[in-house]
Image (cartoon, rainbow, N blue to C red; front, side, top):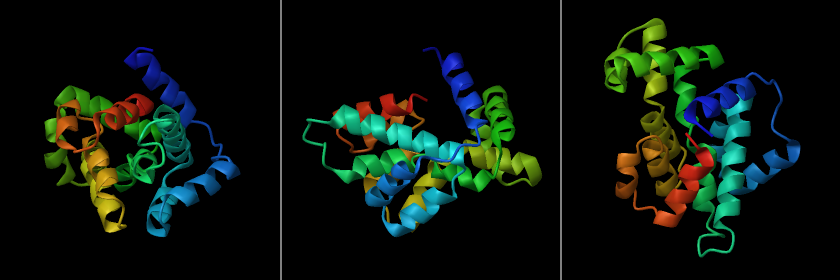
Length: 177
């Protein structure tokens, strides 16, 4: 699937008001610690559904490998987008922030974050990987989950994560961003 088709599917999926399935929520509670779960549970419904789908794909990809029973990778998948909470943007605001970042360059995110109003929120949204890593560290999540959150949108940073290559492949493919 091309990037545009993927983004369109994510956009329309985000418009659904459906909550995650109760069985999935119970499963998430077995993966995350109480503080992580509290942060994860603050995410909008569409982000929680997305993170569950990502984690389930990671779980399937790692089945039968030496990493199959390591909860850090499911934790990383579930929490990779928690930094989006800081921007407090709805679906249309996220689209606008993504477009603004594409036009002006993601390098503007830091400067925008120092502004006020919607400009600040756009900057925070574009910085969601680093903000998510900070949130994960604050709720005593694993180092690996924080590192993945910080690197998940920057292919050039993957080699610096210390995450095993096959796990990196599974995480990246599952998120499909």
